[in-house]
Structures are given as C-alpha cells and as structure tokens.
Length: 207
Length: 207
Image (tube, rainbow over all chains, first blue to last red; front, side, top):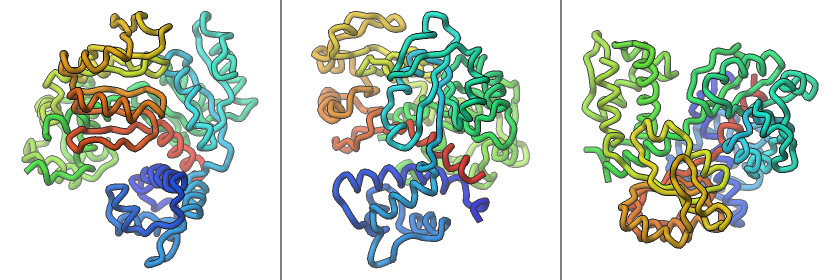
C-alpha cells in the first residue's frame, strides 16, 4: 500500500508533525480538519486525503485527538526507531547542525562527527569529538549508522556519498548543491538554503 | 493576476530555477516539458500549468529555450533586483550562511552581520565585520535592507523580527522554530532543518 503514497503527501508529514507538536505545547487536545487546515494554509479535504493514505485518523465531526495523531504520525515517520546519524564536515555548518537540539528532540541520535582538517580533528562539539575522515568507513560499518549529514565541499560530495552508501548508510542529507548518483535504495534529501530566499524575493517583488 | 497564483506554484519556482541552471551548466540549450518533468519528478501537465500562471513560456513540440526560461524565471523571482540582506546572529549557523556563496550567485547581497556577543562583535566573516545588535535598527533604516536572516535564539526571534519589521525590512528568513506574529506585508520563510531528516526517516522505515 505504502508504495502508492505520493511524494508530496510524504513531504507534508513532517509539517503535520510540527504543527501537532505546537498544538500540544499550546495545550490544545482536539482539532478539526477544518481548523488544522486553516492554521496550515491547506484545505480540509487535502488533510483528510493525506491522512487517508495512512488509513485515516480520528473521526469527522469530532475532530482529531492531537496527542494521538502526533504519536501516530511520529510512528509513520519512524521517529521512534532510534535512527543514528553522523555529520561529515565539521566546518561552521557542520558545527551548527551538531548543536541543533531539534534533531535530538525528533529522535535522531548524533553519534559521530568527521572532518579532514587536522586543525578540526580532535576538537569537541556538543560533547562529541571530531574524527578524521579516514575513520569514516570503519565507524559507519561498526556502528551501523543510519543517516549521514553531508556538509563537505561540493567536489567531495559524490565520493563521500559513495563511500557512505557502500558502508551501509541508508539516508543522506546533502547540503551541497549537487545531484548524487547513488544506488536506488539510498534515500537522499537535498537541502537548498537559497530556496527560501528566492521565495522571499518573489514576495517582495509581488507585494 | 499574480494574486491568484497558488503558494505551491510559487514555491516550485526556485526549484525550476535551480534545474534550469543545472541544464545550462551542462550545456543543454533546449528541453521539452516532458523531459523537464521527468528530471524533476513532476508531470508535464503540471509544468505547463505552472508556467501558464505566468503567461506560459516557449512553444509546445519545440520545447523550452533553457537560457531564456532561466532568465524569465529569475526575473519573476526578482533575482535581478539586487535585494540586500543582513544576518542577525553570527554564531556557527550565521557564519556558515555568511560564507554560503550560492546566495550571492542568486543575486542576494550580504551587507551586514549582527550579534550581541561581545566576543563576536568586531570579528570579520567573509570580509564583513560583525556589528553589535544595538546598531541593527539604524543600519537597516539607513541602508534600506530588504531581507534579514534570523539565526538568533528562539526567545529573541519575535522581538528582533518586530524591530526589523518596524525598521523597514520586507522579508525574514527564520531558522528558529517559532511562529512569528508580524504585520501582513512582511514576507516570512521559516526554515525547518529537521524536515529533511524526518523525510529520510520515513524512507528508511518504508523501503
């Protein structure tokens, strides 16, 4: 069944999860699809369609139980599976991500940091010591690392990604703007930090 | 006319722009909507629909001229308007963004960096000296800054955003996970770095 779920539905799941978390923090116990839609800038029918892809949650008229829905979407997203991750590239961006407490809150466990710069190797970030890039493959294999965040220079992305894929990493979050050529069973998320800026530029031009 | 364009179409524009840039770099001069769709994981009819929101480009059967389309979408996005930006918060993330060369490539001009930490004020990043937060309002007013990137701690986001809005900033890129309460004419892009990780988690769980 799950193979039929479209990418756009899947990509909305993290957003639902975040919104529900915010409702929970604000002490809201129940919400209708209409109200959730309004807050999220979607339509109620889109929300019901999305949720039906996963069997549907809650009852119409009665609304969704925020706590239950939050937990169910978290389960669907696999946030309770204890995925481990490493950050490859411990420059400014790598260090910022190593201290990003939301990752841990979402269930991701940072287990290693890697860099090839002798000046950075051995320094500690958020309690984790930066290791040399030559340890990378062995570490990934022996610790069965699930996810790697790549903040390496563009030219290093493809070879590093290949090494990580061969060592058993299942997912890559890539901050360098390159299309990766990898085996199909490796999940890749490319992060484009200039997209939000381009969106703002459009808004400013067309207001 | 432009008011009727849906948010999801607008949010796809940066992606089209990036893809066209990549085609250009790879020396591809022409592309059909079908081929562009395949490469982007969209449908050809969705691409034609999106482009028609802006009057449509190119001819069917003949395909799009990559160079022309790239320039037109850049114009629609306002990337040639010389938008200026500042980064507020010069910690690891702020410093990483200050050195992110894609921003400049897309036409955004970094003109200032701000922090409230005495140890950081006066240091230089990418040729720009970090100023104290008490200079912020005056600087924004006298330099007519268009966009501010906020990498300040969560508690500081709302007051900083209000100050920036009052001083004339038109767009905010917010990295802290908070909903901002601002005048409607201020464009806001919230960046959620854990969304791509949650997507990877889903993929890993459901492969």
